Image 1 (cartoon, rainbow, N blue to C red):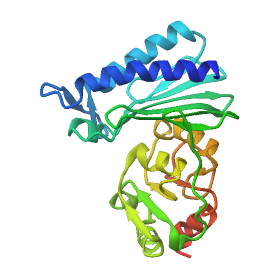
Image 2: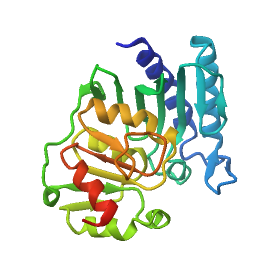
Image 3: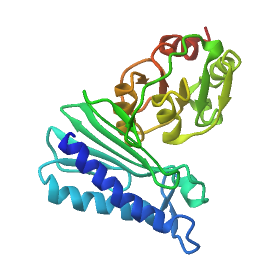
Image 4: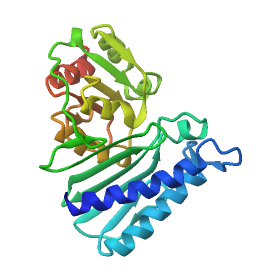
Length: 254
C-alpha cells in the first residue's frame, strides 16, 4: 500500500472515533460560521487531530483544512474536510464523512472518504485502483441517459449557477433521480450504484479526496463546464460514458 494512503487511513481511523463519540450527543456544541453554515465541536476536534498527526508524520507538508485554512508551503499538500455533511451530522443523520486527500505538484494522488455512522469507507491512490471497505470498485457501464440513475445535492442550490432549469430538464431524461447529497453521491458513482452525480457549490476540500476515488474507479469528476478540477465551479461526476452528454445538457439544455 502507498505509505501516504496508509497514513491517511490511519488518520481516518482516529477521525472516526472522534466523530462517532459526538454523533447524536445531546450536549454537542454547534456554532454558525460567517457563511451561515454550521460547524460543530467535532469538526474542529477532527481537524485539530489530523493537523497534529501530520505535523509529526509529514512535517514538511502543507495542510489545507475547511475549519483552519492553509498552513505551510511546498509541492505536497494535505486537503482535509473533517466532517463533510456537517448539517447531517448535527441533525443525527448518518450521511457524513471525513475526507482526506494528498495533492502532489497540483495532482490529487491519495483520497480517503470515511463514513463511520454508515459503516463505510472508500479510498484510492494513483495507479492502485479504488476500493470500498477493502474490495475493488468500478463505475457502472450504463451508456444511455434513459437508463441512468442520477443523484444530486440540491436542485434549489443550482439556482445561483443558472443551470437549475437545465438540471430539471436533465432529470426528465434519466431513469431515476434521488437527492442523497454531499460526498455520498460521488462515491456511489465510483462504486457503480449511481451513474451521474451533480453538486452545485462544492469547495476544494469537498472534492479533493473524491476525485481520486472516482477516477481510479474509472469515472470522471469535473466542474459543470467539463474542466477536470477539484477547485469548485460545481461538480459533475459520472461513469465516464455519460459525461460529455451530461455536461452538454447542463451547458445548453441539449
